[in-house]
Length: 74
Image 1: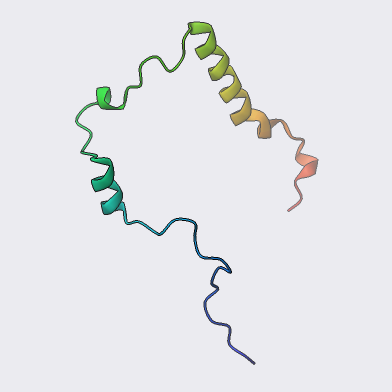
Image 2: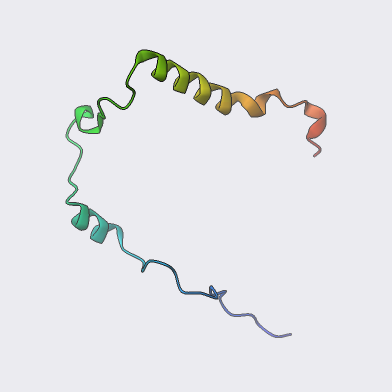
């Protein structure tokens, strides 16, 4: 029986692999000091836009829970 070596992609990757350390250095990222560092103000222009996004996200996360159990076969 012939042994198969590691699978290699046919084409080289579009971007060279970069280590996490190199990415942090390139982005000049630092440690998160507070939750305010994560805030992204003005992502949604109106409260209605935010409510629409939250409703969509909720519906998508729970969509698979509505499938009949007959579709699942062990």
